[in-house]
Image (tube, rainbow, N blue to C red; front, side, top):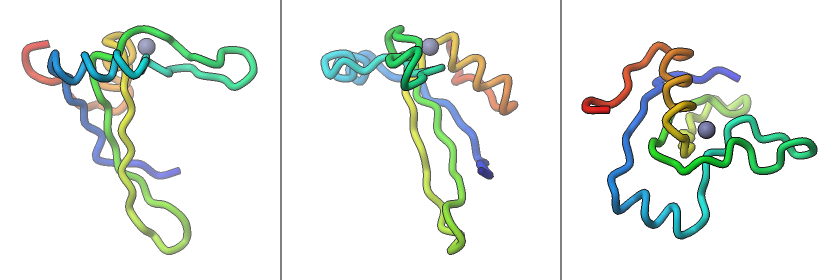
Length: 86
Ligand SMILES: [Zn+2]
């Protein structure tokens, strides 16, 4: 998979509230058999990236909720900055 344009946004209190209300937690490391819920910590950030799908070369963007720890890991891995003030 080729992905690019990695970026991170911080959720405000309202976004965290509704995501929490829908039971969204960090799914980092999720594995269907061994770890079905993944990390399970509350979501504080959204990480986003674009990727090319299929042979037609369409660009799709993906967004995932992450806890602080895994947002920071994403920042390091993809060499993109954490949002200001975090
Ligand atoms: Zn996490």
